[in-house]
Image 1 (cartoon, rainbow, N blue to C red):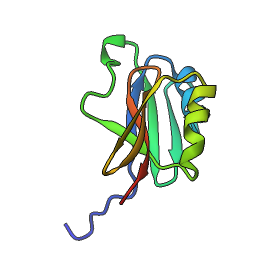
Image 2: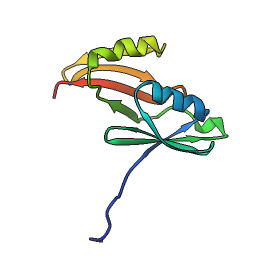
Image 3: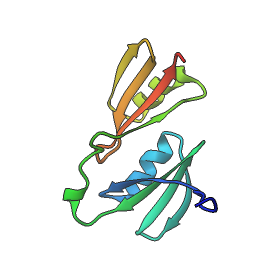
Length: 118
């Protein structure tokens, strides 16, 4: 088993509308790496790849369950006005671990920006 190593990793999010998902994730700062027609797209943020997979059965697009994806912005103070300008509803939370802006993608996947205190 010594020869086995993970080369790369991707978090895949099922989406009901691939074009809408690409626009949404681009609007919050991710970059489109690849797109394979209407079958799959890969977006990137520093240190992370997110795959967007359209599904025909919209019952399989049900938010993120117990998973959420977090981002750390270069300038946390710019996050709130950015979310507001994009019309993305969010909630703010402050605790001993940091300050948060919690929001969802168009299919209900839980996302957040954090300004960590660690």
